Length: 252
Image (tube, rainbow, N blue to C red; front, side, top):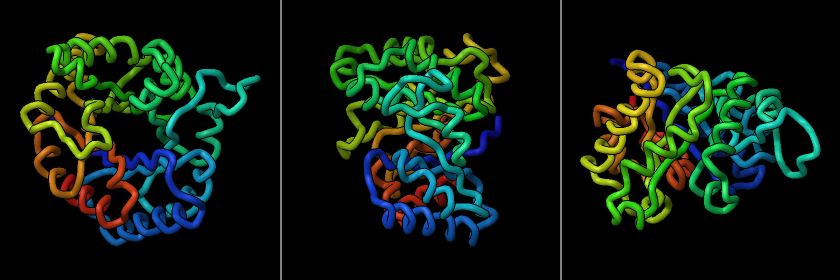
């Protein structure tokens, strides 16, 4: 079944206004010059940079997303931002349940699910992240951990239009290590099988599953060519226009 690859750049806590403007503009310029590119592009800057990034990519095929949202629409939640606010400032996607949020902020599957449901209600596409640690992989728990996180984090009403899954082996994020093609495909196939059980074969067959563990220009083509890998959630390589664009070309 044909799925349009998504190449999503997670800028994490990097960049200032000038950096964000130049990076977003550089990506937008390349995208506008390549209208036949066979993938979708997304950048997810830090919250304060969303406005300048959205302005820089306006009129291009590049979408903008947030890196997190609160489960509530409004209220006394200092330091948080709602999905409706993200939508209002120009976002169309939001990353939820990233391993750094799960670790640094002790986010649970239930919290990720609540945030994802808020994202869907606001009209955003939820990118729901799951992944195992090195200790869990070494203990033979990779498939169990990922399918359990998926069951606990998938929002009610999830379908192939409003939800994307990102598999991020925690041991491969920012370490330079990367899952072998066989390892990546094994987990992506297990995720799709679990999605079939959760939302049915038709929607599961159309839902995109991204790989998010140190995807770079030199390994992107091999990973994206795998049957159940539908693009990438890119960290460090998304901070350089040429690297991000090379991955996009590998997908398109």
